[in-house]
Image (cartoon, one colour):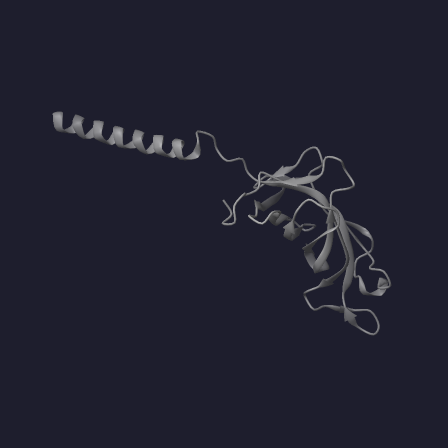
Length: 202
């Protein structure tokens, strides 16, 4: 009987120590999930109306400027996935990788990659994907913060406007007459918060 009680005490103490270590490692507070607000639109690229397979329209809209959507949450029943990293660099500026996806028949993905410092008309690579419409990419889209005084960039967060004047469909689809690679213009507002703050994604 005494041996059993002693074993129970050891098990309880071991579990308590483990729990305390986990809480201490986390600082006693859970890490909030990444969250995003995105509004994006497609349009005809200048001089390439016949090469854009979508009419000017909303592309992907997630959340609102005052209410972002968190990773693993849902919007109108569709699952949302958010991943972002806004990590300060020793040389200045921030390494930015930000991606948001919404599932469903009308779902899609918006992503930006680049090094940003918070200035006007910076360059990022961007991806706009939506169902059967295509997967459009451009390596030198413009990103700036001038359309809203609340926009900006800091460790762990970024909010700005992206403009891609000539994004190419990487699926290789050809449209128009004569056929050519599909090309569209994309623009939108992107806000990512609670992002990872180090190069390894932590």
